[in-house]
Length: 239
Image (tube, rainbow, N blue to C red; front, side, top):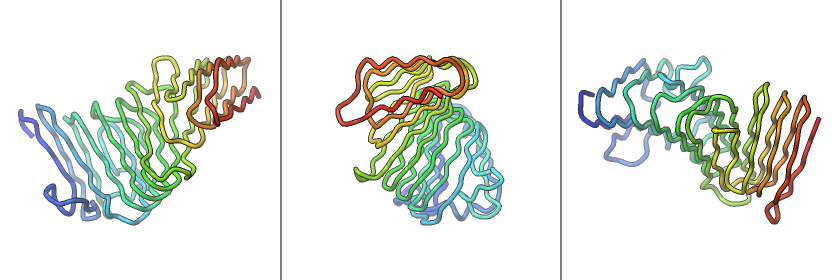
């Protein structure tokens, strides 16, 4: 890409036309943005198939079960400031184990999609229409993860958050879930589940923007409910 600010697009229609797919990528693609504020868009929004895609700090679509690109396709990337992935109307599965760009946007359009975030810098995720499930595994989030859902109200969109094997301190409000410095902003959900797993964990609730189920797991856990949100119940499981 050189020293300038470059825009890269993988898209069957090209950047001048709306929508497109990445099914035509059937071999390994390597992209180096170089200097500048570089952006990459992966445009697969007209693909109706149910696809699986894995995003790491250096690759997209290289997981053993990935079907995002055509057979044999994958992307190795570096030197990005922003990465946007737009998938289609199928029931897509997106697994994020790391992000190499400071900002990553995931838009999964239609379908009952499953997005799992294990490690990431600043990231936004929008499941679109359908009953979508967002899973966040706390412990390695270095930036803010923001969840929203532009689908029709009434579908069952769910956020599942998992703690660590150690001591977790969760704080929940009507728009945000935090574990220490790790932050997930959320909106347009029907259910929110937090499982702290093992350890002597604490939960502090100052509102809940969805019906919430909080599980302490093994250990001596402390639950403090300061306030809840009208219409959204809270279930506490000490285990």
